[in-house]
Image (cartoon, rainbow, N blue to C red):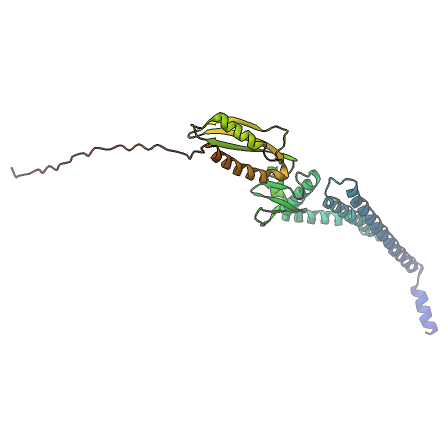
Length: 293
């Protein structure tokens, strides 16, 4: 490098260019610092929110993970805005553009967003939990998984059903597993010529014969109504929710066996048909003769 080159370089390195280079270097360092600080704060905030799941165990872990990610990306977005402002980029128009794009994406994904909102509500208010047997909308089954956008049900015959959360949240939810006990309500019909006192005693003995039946509330056995072809008894017994189906099947079997052993008839529906003989109607033909006048 000769003397002329050094002269050219010194002429190019004016004070303004030196100040601009220093400013760019400072802005780059500041941007890196802001980015690192935003990443550190966002990661810390996410960890703190996720850690709250240990304190509030009645809420689902998925909710805290979702909220943690939202806070994380919000802090990172704020950090990016600070970095852009540091370099003199106007963020007002950029924010308007992002808002318009967000609105368009929201309209295009309104079904997905409604599933997301319903998923947050399900996780927050917990109308059912994993392992509960529920009926919602037109589907029913055991809840095997709860996600932000959908809920997975397994039917009694092992079929998996994936239901959008908006369909569940917008309909009535029947949770068969929510309460620890359930009442079994059976209607037992006996023949009109059956001994009602004896029938009452047999049903009471059956209600107390299984240890899965709860003594409190006490079983209720009463004559319910006089049906078309039977006298109907109400048979109500309380049991633990996990014992309900097995106990109902066992009681149905025992009632049939005990009724047969005690000569208590279970009538079939009967109908009386009356046959009416319709008399024949005699018909005759009439022939008319016509002649010329």
